[in-house]
Structure formats: C-alpha cells, structure tokens
Image: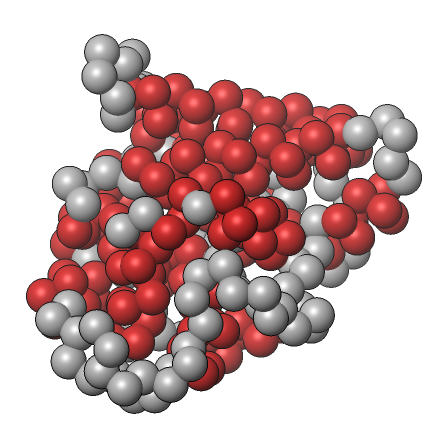
Length: 253
Ligand SMILES: [Zn+2]
Ligand SMILES: [Zn+2]
C-alpha cells in the first residue's frame, strides 16, 4: 500500500488508448512466466475488481484481457483460489455470449460483425505494466511462484485435453471447433458459415454456464465437455498457441 508507485492506473481508470493490442501480443507468446508487476495487477482483479461494473464495460470493449494476461488471470485463479476457474468462467460466459450474438446477428453484415469483434482498447494488465515502476515488495511472492509453477493448471488442462483438443481452431491446430477470433480477424472464413460459427459459440456459452453453476452450492455436476469450456473460450478469443504454453505440452500432435 502506497509504496511510492507512480500513478499506475487503477482498474477502471478512464484513459484508454484507441490502438488495438492484438498485434502486440505476438512477442509475448514465447514465454508464459509472469512478473511481479503482472501478478500484482492480476491479483487486484482476483480480489474483486473484475466484478466492478466499469471494469466489465471496459472488458467488453477489449474482449477480456490480452491472451497472455487472460491466461495469467485464469492461472492465478486456479493456482491460488481453490483450483477452479470460477470468475474466469463467469467472465467468459458473458464474453462468449456477446460474441455469439454478433456472429449470428442477421441484422449485422459480416464485415461489421468482424469489426465489432476487434479489440478496442488496451489490456488492463498491459496498461498497468507499462506504467508501473519495477515492483516494490508486494507480499505476493508466493502467488507469483505458484503462478509460474502452474501445477494445478497443468493438471486441469491435461484432464480436459481430449475435449478441448477436438474442438481446437482448424487453422491453429487442425481441430474441428470454430475458427478462433484472431483467425477470423485475419480474414479466414468460418467453415459452414457464420450461423455454424454462432451455433458453436452458443454451445460453448451453454457449457460455460453449466461449469459456473457446477461451482456453486448444489449446482449440477460438470461433465467433461463443460470442464473443457473455459479452455476453449480463452483459446477462441486469443488463439490456441497460448494454450500450448500454458499446458506445457505439445498440443499440435
Ligand atoms: Zn495484457
Ligand atoms: Zn486459430
């Protein structure tokens, strides 16, 4: 608290550069080790900031965090908050539903639907990292170590692999799932057209909904397809190569 950190933006701070972060994530894909500054911002989200209404509005504009930090958030939650991606699944149920609505909209030409699927704004965590001074002691050393160890995440990803691997993006990993958002934005046409894409996304949203409820009191038991849903959601928004890093496995075979 108040260690002299410069005016790093609080979640919800109004300044949002208009440039997209999609192209800027490629350089980060080589390594999924997180820094203390990243852990600190992601931890503030886990502490409840991600539920803030203003934050949620910004997350709609940016379709969540950038791929690296979307995984960082999920990993932090799984490793430190009980081994389950609860708020991750809540966020992605929301985002996938919004994307499905755009993909299936009869009123919206495909070109405009694609334009709305672009990221409009900068990732919260990237923004924070760019402005934060190198970290002071945050007391989050254990959180960071567990995030970078990823023991629980690795187990979860391995347990649901059969499900998510089959529904991977055909362009990323030759799977049979919907074309991921980065490939759609790059001009790849969804096989079967946008209605089939929308159908796949609505199905994903339904599975996320069951997964969220399964983590609540007296909720249903999630099956294998539901357990894989959060993985598919992160990979659909950010591309599947980040999953390979997170899983520490060769998911191309
Ligand atoms: Zn980011
Ligand atoms: Zn793809």
